[in-house]
Length: 363
Ligand code: UDP
Image (tube, rainbow, N blue to C red; front, side, top):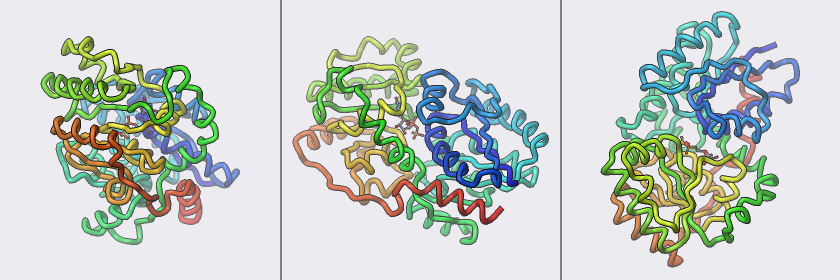
C-alpha cells in the first residue's frame, strides 16, 4: 500500500483536493490517502462548509493554525507538520495551490526526503509582491511531481530550467470539482433566495492585499463598486480579510443599497451565482478559471494574472487596478460588448484522475 498525505489550508485548496481524494478511492487498498488541514482558514464559512458540500471526509490531521503573519503561519505549519511526517512516514505529500500551507508543507517534506507533488504547478504572475507568487516559485523548485493546469505553466517551468521528467500537463482540478458538482449547483435556489434573476446581476469578490489592505485602496474600491452597482444589482460575498479591513477603516457603511453584502458563501451557492451572473468582477485566482469554464464575462481587478489562458482564450478581462478603467470596462461589458471564449485544453473534469493514475504508477 502506498501512503499519501495531502495538505490543505485555505478555501481554494479544499476545492482542488476534493476531486483528487475521490480519484484515489478507485485504487482501493493500494493507496491510502489522508488529509491534513493546517487550519489556515478555519471558520465554518471558509472551511467546514466546503468539506460538507464537496463530500470530503473529516481531515485525518488538523494543525489548528489559526491566523498570524506569513512568517508565523509558515513556521507553525512547519513545526506541526514535521511531527506528523515523522510519525506517519508517507510515500508522498501532495500540496495544491499557492498558499502558505503549500510552501510550508513542501519544505518540511523534502527535508525529510519525502517526495512532493504540487497540484497547480507552473503558474506565474511575475509579480513578486504577491505572497502567492513566492509560494508558487519556491514550491515548484522543490517539488518532485509538477502537475500543470495550462500551457503557460509548461513554458514557465521550462524557462526556469525544471526538468521535463517532473512536469505533467494534467488539466485543472478546480474545473473537475465544478463539473462534478454541476448537477447540485443547478439545483441551488440561491437566486430565488436573494431575489435575483438570471443574467441580471453582477457578482463580485475581493481579498487580495493589493486591493483591500490600505484604507485608500479599499475606499476607492468601494466607490467603484457603488458606481457599478448603480448600473446593475451587485452581489458581494465579503472575504473575512476584506470585511475586517472595511470595519477597521470605518468603511462598512459606505456601501450603497444596490449592493447585496453577504458573508462568504458556500461552494454550491457561489457557483450557482457565478453561472447565472451577467458579469463577475474579482481579484480571485480560481474565479478567473471558473468564469472561463462557464463562459461568463469576468473583470479581473489586478495588473497581472498567473492564469493567462483565461484572458487569451477565455472570457477574462485583465483590467488592472485603475478603478476608472474598471468602471468603464464594466459599462462596456454590460452594454453587450462581450468576449466569446473557448475552453482551455484538458479542462475536462478528468485532471484528478490523471494525477491519481500518474501517482499510482510512479510511487
Ligand atoms: N468561493 C466560494 N464562496 C465565496 C467566494 C469564493 O465558494 O464566497 C470559491 C470560488 O468558487 C473559488 C474559490 O472559492 O472556487 C476561490 O477562492 P479565493 O478567491 O478565496 O482564492 P484564490 O483562488 O484567489 O486563491
